Length: 78
Image 1 (cartoon, rainbow, N blue to C red):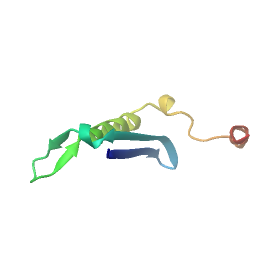
Image 2: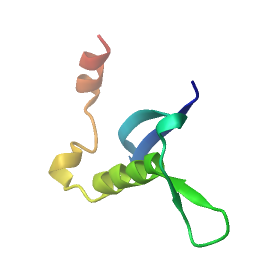
Image 3: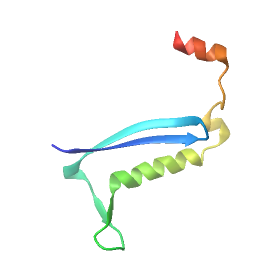
Image 4: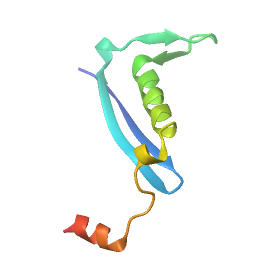
């Protein structure tokens, strides 16, 4: 069984908004032909781009705080 893996890291400036890993068995992938030659894009690629676009179009409230207080960071580290 061969798997394809896509790792999506969405950044806005220095802030990482999201990291996600998606995997799909190559036997189930759907290839969509592009206009030029024998080029194609897979359904997993399309989903990855749609997810990244959704994060970049999110509101500031949906994205969360831009900076962290040092106290908050230390609490998370414990």
